Image 1 (cartoon, rainbow, N blue to C red):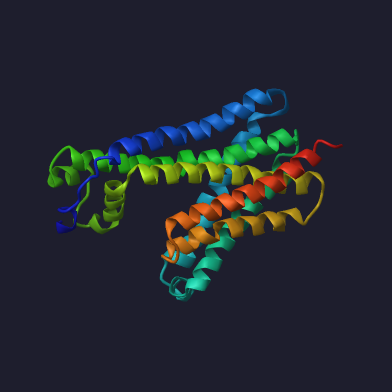
Image 2 (spheres, rainbow, N blue to C red):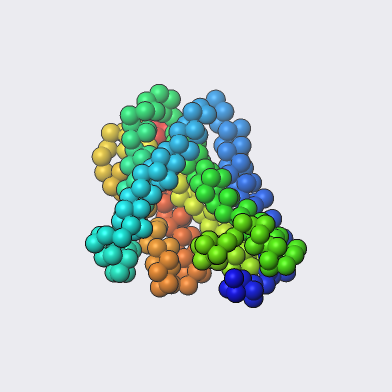
Amino acid sequence: MKEFENIVIGKNSIPSLVITIVLMIAIAVGFFLYWWIKHKLQTKISYLIAGAVGFIVSARVLELGVHYICILMDNPVSRFINGNTVAFVLYGILMAGVFEECGRYIIVKYIMKKDRTRENAVLYGIGHGGIEILAVLLPAMITYLAVAVSFSSGSTESALKALNITEETAQAALPSVQAAAAFDYGLMAMNVIERLLAMFCHIGLTVVVFYGVVRDKKGYLPLAILLHMLMDTFPVMYQRGLLPLWSVEVWAAFWAVAIMCIAVRLYRKMAVS
């Protein structure tokens, strides 16, 4: 497999990946512990679990199921979306906004009918964002670390054998190997900052949806969907190679601040009976 012969693991790849993994775990656990200790009497662990389950069902089961049909399968719809940048961007941001925010709405309104405290709204958001780290991003980072260790501690042949990469799986595995080789402290910082911003966005959007439910105001679900779509616009455009990575981080920071400003205002209003 000639495509792997020139792979060189950067000298900072392994330490930066280890630190990234530690910091990502710290983000997920730290947000929970801070809020749980501070508001133990006003929160229920069931809301943390509901947020985690809500993300898995809405984003990793239902949304991915639609992606399989509309993006991965070969049909007229997938060919149109993949072949048209505007359609791809609109589809990507719409699916993310609709599935995740409607998932929050359905769970809070129809399942979590008790203990609707504003503190539980934040705990739900922590569960939603935390499980995204632990179930989606952390496994990817651990995979990159395993790749980096394998390629740096032996021959290419032994690394491929250890990672169970064959002729049939080579093309699918190549991007992960290249990503592991290129990982450095700069990417570490970007990944950690992006996760912090995402956690604040998940918490803020949950508060927006939660406020609409407890105050019976229907306009807040569409607002959350719109905010989610705007937040995801640059990341989806980056996937199409239209924007540099730094612009995605700046965009994410702007919308994280905007969403949290709205959420803080609504959080304070929920203190008024």
